[in-house]
Length: 581
Image (cartoon, rainbow, N blue to C red; front, side, top):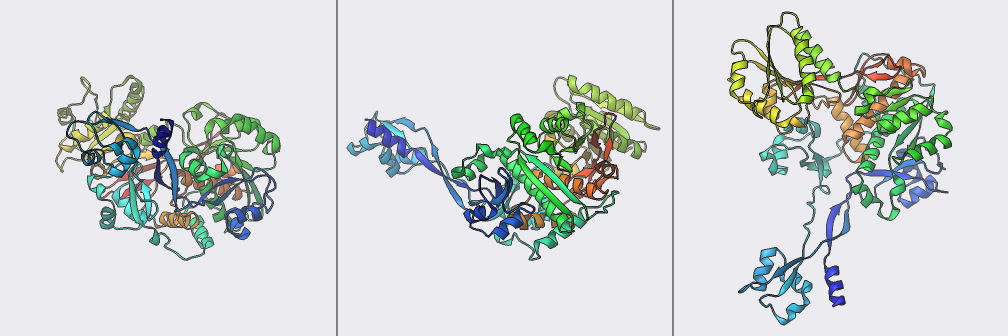
């Protein structure tokens, strides 16, 4: 019996086909006595090529240095073992082995292997073990450039970004006929056509660095000054086992985020180095641990030898570091806690939470010309303060005519309410003050019933998850307008050039964290280098737009620098955005 149980257990160790990450490079922590030459040998590459991947890293890097190395399983199939619990089934009268195999989608051989007693024949009442065959993952990543649909994606902007036609996109993704859905993984084009340029990578870097600097901030880089930067990210490489590094990478979302940010930051550094900027950067693994941060400070003299620190990735850790060192600390990501936390050397690169409301109201006041205003709210207690702040502010506009408020009655908004509030003769502004899915859908459905000759513009404080299931085509017809701190203009050839440059280097298109890594690193380095090493002066030198982010810094009353940069995005009927910094 024991042997049979072991046999059954063995038979249910099903091999699932899983593809390696579509990233060409992953993070690696240098071990004791390792050199670039020995690491390069392990990865079957030349020391020169590894040095190109890690500019500024010495040939004998310090123990614990974080570098980028090739993903050995890039584009390959990784076989991982998955244990599945067997199903039990009682044989019914008149059933056959063939019928049972069809019923459960397994072969007769699989049934016989899982049930050795079948050699004596199938009998009524017999308990069978039904093999659970795990379906293999679709072979998407191996042969195609893929993209996971995110907020603000439309079929139109995806075709522009990836250089494909709508017809080809629909042909590769038949499910698109059911609509573009958040999280959907799309095949964009065969991998064979990914690289669109044979230019040397340095030319891409020069092009990127010249294309992303359109703003009031004037770039005037001092090439004679060396800049030393520390970048602290939560790679958590202490938790990885070398023998299963790539499998861990597939499972560890935090490691992906850190590696993506690293690749974006490195591209920014390479871009500026191609222009002659002398930058030395050292990457550190925070391990997402307070104890590790304390250790890093002790081992690196509180980072007294660097000009500024980018990271750690999470705001709490960045704030902690800023309290224990004198150098400027750049917090790269937004946190709800940042509005209440200040430190003179802390630079918050993400705008504060109420800036969207301020920016939208300022835009509305500047453009108000007698429109009929309808404000829609979900009626929830936690949104009432914001609702009446907005209503009172609009009532203070010069020559305001009428401001109406619509809230749910008995849990829903009746479409007939919009007929009472929408003007048939005057232009209408409908403003959604809610992130509630039901309220948003009710508003959109309520506006669909009006004829083409009724003028309606739709506004919101952001394009959050409540808009994920709203058709972008209809939003375009309503000239949907909202503020945002990040936006990718796929109409901009320069932005598409950046995507190509990133792909040439990394064999993958940038995630939002890679974009953030590029934008924050590039912007800080340029501001520092353009003002002779005076970062305060650089931060006060005007607004700048990068690949997706916008930066406009000012020092608050507590001494911290806040980013007050936001775009106003307004969609036209053909879904081409009008971008207003």
